[in-house]
Length: 506
Ligand code: HEM
Image (cartoon, rainbow, N blue to C red; front, side, top):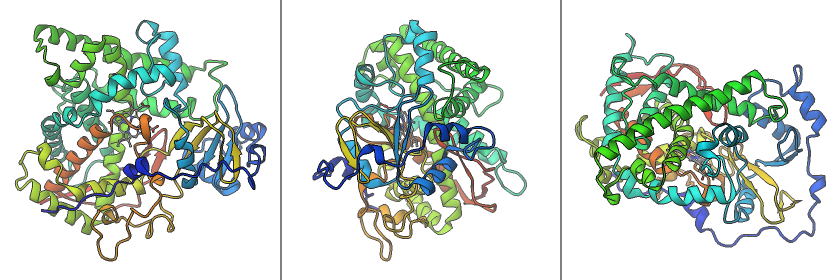
């Protein structure tokens, strides 16, 4: 059995001590001199015929970098505040170090607008984990942390998440074609698995999405709603949009998406309350996540569960597809992982337990390396609370800074052999001839964000992702026989190719 440990850059980021905030402003340039995209140019280039027109966030990012360098100022426009974008990881630490006690992340304004104006009976005086800032966010996060971030609580779901993964293995056997390949829309199947898993955890409910005959009546609406949410908010919140002045038909459709999702979640929560009343265990220690939330307040439960569904389905699905893709493209690494998994699950039907799940360092390293090569989110955003200096420019307090490590994650300087898939770089024990990730600035690689505002669903995501990947690798060799996978950027990076993995029984 492998007993190697996995290197944690994010843990090092938390612990790193001496920081130079760059407050010595001698030899620095004023904020006004930072390369800036003018309002006029931004509008012109976003119109038909302009170079940003219909381009993805990722494509626009590359254009900015090539034209303006590693730090650029985007002026305020159409109700959006001014934002500094930086692609240089050295700046990230300076920004995170001045994020304050209630870190401010640019919210999803359309969601806040919907919640405050369309459904005040649920949301008005309460915030959201995902979309609020300040005291309202802090109140929700204080409730959510001990429930969602507790390893003990999340571990309780291992058996159920493992059962769902094993059911998904049967789905994969059923849907393979005569060449033993997955169908072109395999991403949708993975999305379905992700939703099944997250609702089992957050709503304490199996939707039976793998079985056409018994699947929940709201399944399609939920899957479509969550996908629309990501695509539409990338359009209405990620880019300049006029909705704060005029609500287009498309924007009204987004409000309908929010309505549908809220209604479905309310419906399940009402059912859970009914079941809870019929069968009240009155034992907080043994309670599920939903029951713990309901004990606080029904509206809190609706908000937290909605946030989990919005934030947790497509992200985990993308991360899983990326990991499988990396393994399919690197069969020798896949074989190392398989040996580790066989040690833990000697039989294909062996059940995963929390103890066994802890003992798969190579799997952890595989997932990390996949995150590095295929980041699920483009980066992190924070508002500064003090004056700082980044890339030699003075940046005043209260500036929103978007930190995007896209170019650094594969740079030779930060990650030697940066374009290669080398999970070994994350293992504590050095593998001969393999570069270590540990030497890199820990702020370069923060796939789940940083500090008090970091991903509240990290443990749930890791449990789901690792359990499914372990089960797939235990059952099949996976191969890739097509051109390289393309990625589409919405708020999350989603695979944009037909994911026709070939699977061979082992
Ligand atoms: C591989 C999958 C996932 C990735 C890569 C991911 C990544 C992230 C990132 C980068 C943030 C922002 C952190 C920051 O600003 O510092 C975030 C926030 C969040 N995530 Fe995740 N996430 C994943 C899965 C999940 C899951 C499964 C859930 C829920 C079950 C979830 C719930 C949330 C919530 C509610 C927030 C907002 C937290 C706050 O602002 O207080 N995420 N996630």
